[in-house]
Length: 101
Image 1 (cartoon, helix red, strand yellow):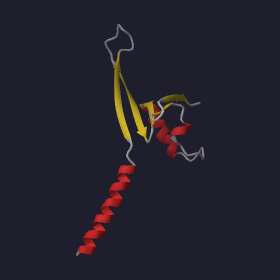
Image 2 (image 1 turned 120 degrees about the vertical axis):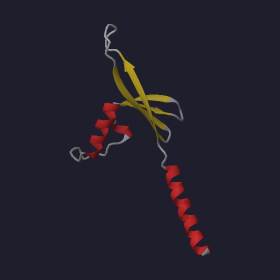
Image 3 (image 1 turned 180 degrees about the vertical axis):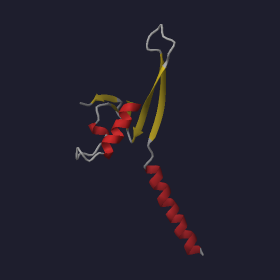
């Protein structure tokens, strides 16, 4: 019985460490605006702030969806990563903003 409890405890620790190490944060920002000052119609755009490790990425909802489609596509034969996107990338550790092209 003690051996089973010990094995379950070790398994729990391994799973917990895996989840803690793989933590990524995503924050959603919603922008509501009027296209014209005379207009009664409002439009909404969603933006995502993704934090992975010491890097943060800020992008629109449409760009995030198209990035997901690129990741599923085998047409380009190139893996989609944060580094090869045309986005604003900020390294949190040194607080420098880099424009990727």
